[in-house]
Amino acid sequence: MSTVTPSLLSLVENTAETRLVSDDAQLAATLANSARHGLPPISITPLHGQHLSLLAQLVSARAVLEVGTLGGYSAQWFARAGARVTSIE
Image (cartoon, rainbow, N blue to C red):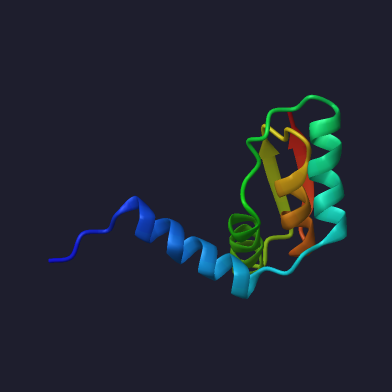
């Protein structure tokens, strides 16, 4: 049986993010705006955002309720899937 180590998980995630997620000016601006306003840097990663967007597309989500919006980063990923996002902080 093999052991999954934190370094292996990090390698897999970094490889996936490099190959599957492209740079995006709008998302980068959202993160910069959050930092500028003193919000903590606890947003999801771009790879997780793309995963959320894909899941929303797979279930044909028309609406998403996001509880705990922070700076709106993950809400943008849901909106990219075509869902109407209702956000509660």
